[in-house]
Amino acid sequence: MRDTTDRRPQHPVRARLARVGAALAVLAGALVGVTTLSGAAAAATQGPCDLYAAGGTPCVAAHSTTRALYAGYGGPLYQVRRASDGATRNIGPLSTGGYADAAAQDAFCAGTSCVITVIYDQSGKGNHLTQAPAGGAAPGPDNLANATAAPVTVNGHAAYGVYIAPGTGYRNDHTSGIATGDQPEGMYAVLDGTHYDAGCCFDYGNAETSNTDTGNGHMEAVYFGSIKVWGSGTGNGPWVMADQENGLFSGLSTGYNANDPSVSHRFLTAMVKGAPNQWAIRAADAQTGSLSTYYSGARPNAAGYNPMHKEGAIILGIGGDNSDSSDGTFYEGVMTAGYPTDATENAVQANVAAAGYRTSAPAGAVAPGSRVSLQATTACCTSDYLRHDDADTKVVLSRITASSPATDKADASWIVHTGLANSACLSFESANSAGHYLRHFDFELYLDPNDGTSQFAQDATFCPGGGNSGKGYSFQSANYPDKYLRHYAYTGYLASFGGSNAWDATGLWNDDTSWLVDPSWG
Image 1 (spheres, rainbow, N blue to C red):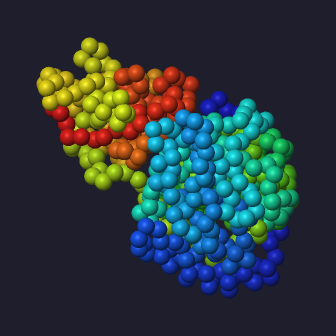
Image 2: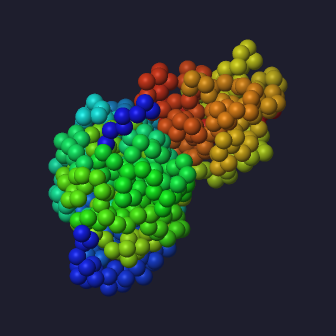
Image 3: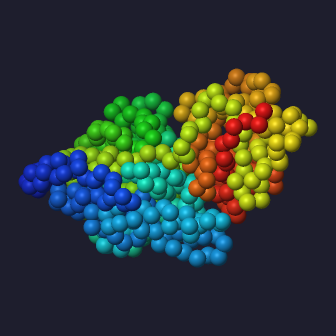
């Protein structure tokens, strides 16, 4: 689906009833679908795809960089490629049915950066996702995701999601078993509910095989974001909607649907399913919640959607025509043959919640009210700290030691506050210049007085997470979520991985965006 704005009959009742008993039976199993950890890698007793199979709607695509989606799966989850020599490595689960071996990735990518080149299909159908080619809306190939930009833990095990920045996308145009025409299917994705934008289109699901917009009803995919061009729900977004091509639908027709709420869960389960003249949207907090149904009913009432004309390609992070201007983070998702019952989906959601998705941050959180200094972790600069420059308002990196002048120590000291624009994030006030905060402007870092505006608050708010290099913390911009605090040539910047500015260079990006949080020098 292409964003042209300026900004960047019901399925048969008999078949349905035949599956209800089986789906109800697996619901109880889903509640104990993940065993208690004992040792390095406890495995799931049932995975989401085991539950779908028990409900009569087996997975025909199963993608995850965090865990196995079948209790019996022990093959590769994804592949990474490192920048230093172009070598690749498959990353699998720690044990059959278990969690991703993030330590293997960390060891392979140490001292360099890595991107995710393949997300393997665990269903056995061979529907692997690789770098998306050019399409009707954008040239290609698309960028590949930085392999360390979305760290999480799953039942206490470190793992990495797929961090989609604008221009990034994955696709498979030559699939097996994916629904075509008006065939029934279901799908879900576990996403970062705080990472989104109003671009087009952060999708996961069924799309055109030609990489072009071939008309209404030629797609069926989960969409997550805040764009309002075609449809919306309550509040300002983001919303879970269905991309059915030439329309992001939150209900029967394009436009507003009062039953589709804005969601803000850190981890979000988003589901879409469709059958002849029937489709539904369901969603939940992936950590604790039960599924809510935002829409269930007839196909959109515009021409081309009944019957549907699905083509069977699979996309991640882009629209069907390679519209690639959206942000998002993906952890796991599947597509099924057949229209899953609500009971089966409820069992899957219970399994997702039991998987224990949590944010990944070092022990000892950066607490509001504390005084800290931010130490570089790159090998060149481990005695250097982020400080403001007394000669101007720029923020730079310079050496600070016990023998440094008191003024230099104070310049490298910060008072931590609850984020000015987001209470879940942080802002840093200078310890020796009251009311002046670390902020970005034109993607460079400055120390400026708080002028009380919403723009300043956003520019001065940073969200902490585990260090992109595996050390310390990384600090993500609240209003440019694909960009992080980085030092480059001893100057402070806000940098994305492989963007258009010199300081977006991929070399040493993971190290340059990772910081140790020390007691303040002054």
